[in-house]
Image 1 (cartoon, rainbow, N blue to C red):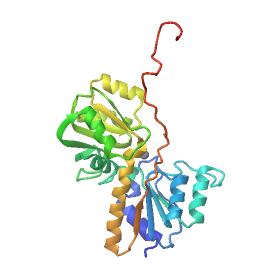
Image 2: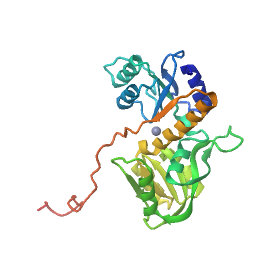
Image 3: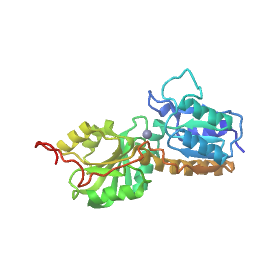
Length: 288
Ligand SMILES: [Zn+2]
């Protein structure tokens, strides 16, 4: 059975921490390097639900995509939600390790997992990492469908492929517009609009698109936009990471049991679609 330090070395080989963005906080948050690891849980978010899931599973390691602490802290007091996560994990002997923007930029990375889940073929990174001579690492991916399909059908494809969330999937642009080439970015993608425009793709699949960047992209005659829940766009990475860790475990004869959390930790829990009863904007007098 490997020690936590052995498993961390393997995780750092898959997603080297030095490839994370400067502002990011990746790596091991808690855990004893000498403790044996038999069971691992992989999740997007280090929140109370996934911490308790790791404890109930009998895992010794929780691997998450999002950091618990992005900025420095002076307390792990269990009266704070983050401190409570730390206490829940430490009390049960569960380590926490984070692979965030280092997993985004990796080959394969978070956007490869998203593209694969949706049935897209990846042709290369959207923003290549200049330190990769092979030109495969970087942020986002440029992808293709085997055959073009209307935007509305592509949005349906995304909604069917990703885990269900309250938000579902929304799209901007003519629903009949044909989509064949797609830029993909798991997680918040509106910082990559310039690269998406330069790539000349038919559609951009990402999450967290805000009104102004989306409106401007549409007004510029840019690609159609397909916006899914942030958590849902990153969840396929958990399965990809589990397969990668399984392969490492087999190579070393570790016998790790690697699990993927199916708990929906997207913060949005309710979606009310606008209906005929919705109030229409009006300039005339009082409603009757
Ligand atoms: Zn994210």
